[in-house]
Length: 121
Length: 107
Image (cartoon, rainbow over all chains, first blue to last red; front, side, top):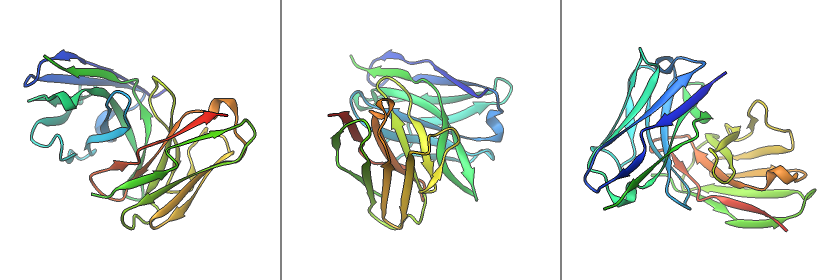
C-alpha cells in the first residue's frame, strides 16, 4: 500500500529555516516523480516544486532560490528545505506522487496528510 | 504562467442532481488537465487525468471532457459524499497551476 507521511512543520519566525520530510512506503521515491503542494489557510492549492526520477527539479517562482527539494534514497524520503521563510509561506504542505503518462506528469495520484507551517513572530 | 479559471466558485445542489463545473485555461493546454476533490481537513484526491480519464477507484458518476482551453467536470447524480471542493490543474507546462476551486454545497 502506498503511503506518504509528512513531518517537520511548526511555528517559525520570519527569516528562519525549516526542513519538511515526507516518508514514503509501498514504492521507491527515487524511481518516481514527487511534488510538494501547499495550501494557505482557507485558500486554494499552490504547486511548490517537483523532483523527477532522474533528479531534475522545478520550482514555483514564489519559492525559487529559497526552497530546495531533495530525496534520500536510503531513507526513501522526500524533503523540502525552506529558507528565508516569509509570512506568506504559511500553509499546509503536502507531498504527492505524480502519475507519469506519455512523458507528461498528468496528476498527483497519492498524497500525504499534510504538515502545517506557520511563519510568524 | 497559465491561469486556470473555474466557474462557478460555489454551487448548491441536491442529492441526485447533475452538476457541471467548468475550467478555462488562459492558453491551449491540449488535454493536460486533471481534476481533484478535496474535503475539509483532507488531502486532495485525483478524480480525472488527461481531461477525461477516470482515476482508478473513482466512481463512474464522475466524468471529464474538453480540450484546448475549455474543460468540464460532470457529476451525473450527486451523492452525499460528493459535497466537497473541486480543483482543476493544468499539467501542460511549469509552473503547474490550479484553478481557484469550486465549492459544492448541499441545497
